[in-house]
Image (cartoon, rainbow, N blue to C red; front, side, top):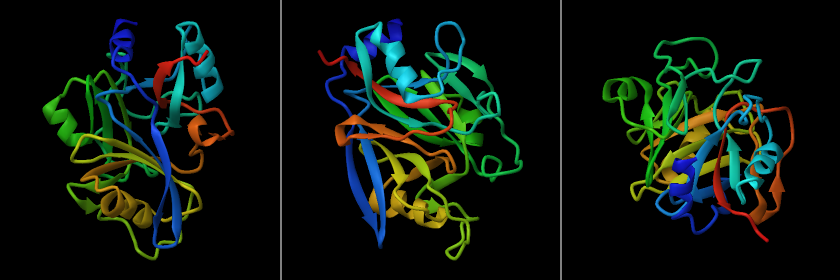
Length: 240
């Protein structure tokens, strides 16, 4: 709670959400400035019950006089909605980083970790994270990396037949965090190019595909669907 109150003391606005276009593909991008916005992860309530939806996160925050300013699903999870890889919430790690290759998109190395710390955030390749062991107030692991030091993931194919609604995150050179979701089905290669060429993020991380969803009340968007695992969002004072 102390961490949340400290973050809220500087939270002055909600995420800026807007359309972006790459070639003829449309995306919605929400940009967060972690210097002035309280960005955090959510998975369970105080009783350990999985939240699973934007509405339940918002209802939980009501007791503190706050609300979600923006939110997005934030990484892959098991059937019980427990995170597949590293997960840190409010400074408490509940699952360790998974460094090895494996099935599915999560195991398509290199994968990475989105790390939030006071006043900033980073997308870090998993082995680099393990080597550096940075202190993260909130962190979630997912995969694959979309952009790695300015280059697209080496396994992405220009002519891939795999197309999904996809969402992910990248951090630009000014420290702004860009969360993006495609408005139609896209390839990994196209989604990675959005972060590299349009949003100019040297490192970017894929969150998910089949269940990608966005909560952005500023643009009247509240995607519904199956219950989610980790959720990331900004916390702002509740409107009266």
